[in-house]
Image (cartoon, rainbow, N blue to C red; front, side, top):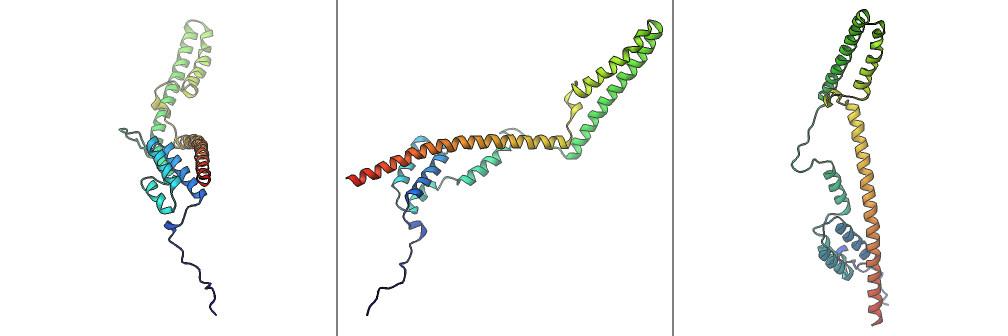
Length: 216
C-alpha cells in the first residue's frame, strides 16, 4: 500500500524565500534610515520604497540595498568621522611628556612672576615706610594676595602659562566624548521618531493597497 511520504519538501535558498509583511516593513525602515542620512534623494527614496512594497522574495530586495551600508556600518562610519579633523586641517598631537614639560614651564613662569612681585612689593613697602609714612608698610598685605588671585585664580596672562595637565586633558576629552555621544543619541532619537512616522504612513499605505487588491 502506497503511503504518503514523510520526507519534507526541499527548502528553497534563503534568497528565494517569500517575504512577510514584517520583513517588507523592516526594509522600508532601513530605506527611511538611509534617506534620513542623506544617502538617498527623495525621488530615489520613493522609487525604492515602491520596489520594496512590491517585492515578493528576499532576492527582490537585494538591488535596493546593494549600494547602502547597514545601520551598524553607518553608525561606525559616523563615529569614526566624528573624531577626525575637519577637511584641510591638521590634528596637532603631543606626547604626555611634552604636555607635562609645557605645563611645568608655565608654572615656573607664574611662580617667578608671583615671587618677583612679592619681593618688589616688600622692598617698596619698606622703603616707603621709612621715607614717607609707616602706613605704606602695609602695602604688601594687599599686593601679594592680588598677585595670587590674578595669576592662579583669574589666570591673567598668555595661554602658554596655563597649559593643562595630561589628567586635565583626559578629563576634558572624556567630557567631550560624553557630550558628543549624548548629542548623537538625541539626533538618532529624533531620526527614529521621524522614521516611525514615515514607516507608519508607508505601512498604512501598503495595507490599504493590499485591501484594495482583494476588493477587486
